[in-house]
Length: 355
Ligand code: FAQ
Image (cartoon, rainbow, N blue to C red; front, top):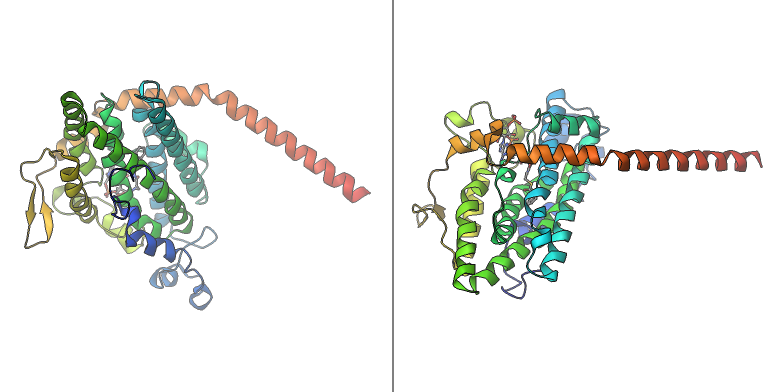
């Protein structure tokens, strides 16, 4: 596993390496009680059984899942851009091979997630249209630029680390296809997070300017990574949010603030190991709470990015639309090939049944 040569491999570096993940993955097998429960939505939820595409479900539950899974899928494919920017400039062949594999994994995650969303009765093209015309969001984090090679390290360590913290509980989401996709996605993200940690580890053991580059990347990615978990659970910013309902439906298992705290608690000791200073003067261990206290997130900046006004929003969507248009011939060719194969198979079957 990447990063094993720089830190004790038995020490969990992200949430997919903790017993929480193992418990969630195990939960995947616990779908055998449904005969006793029946297929009533509320009864299935109460018994902590999975809702499957064939089950009746309230319209709002379906819409919430389409919104969240689509936002997640869009984040994976837009999330290919910041690091994709460094593939041609990665500092060695090893780094280039690793980065290509990572970016390709993100594409794969997008595909699992679009497939999971399609089981809710929505067409993939419709989801992409909603991304391209701004009706659906993607994660705020991907609207920040990757200015140096160290940013690839910071994305792996912090952005993948935050994504995994959020996604391990989604392995226990009440909707089966989403939960099952998450089990695999989290395992793959775990490699990504270790490779980011290893990039920073090596830079921090390099020259003074390499250390400064790593510190600058940590300074720029820390706060946006904390904001990734979404608006706070309480106060004005929580109004109109989805957490309460999504938790009642077993889609979300923890609130945004709880996951953010878990992430801070896991990451601060890692920053110390790396030798990086996190850019928060209020960061201190609170003995009474048993958690790290941290400073105020700039929620104005978060909402500004969500409104489309972040450093790279326009560039990301423009690039995405262009890639989609330029890929039209590939989709047409794949459809033509599939149609030809289907015709051949049908003709073969007709021949066999006539014989
Ligand atoms: N960015 O009430 P809540 C990755 C919106 S994958 C943009 O808390 P909810 C892998 C939210 O949609 C990263 N918008 O909403 C990778 C809602 O607006 P709406 C993506 C955000 O849904 C790594 C409003 O604010 N992961 O990184 C954000 O219950 C490296 C109110 O918020 C997922 O999508 C945000 N950060 O909770 C790839 C995980 N936060 O829709 C490449 C699945 C909130 O009403 C490289 N999603 N909003 O217009 C979730 O867990 C949830 O949807 C949350 C938000 C936690 C993101």
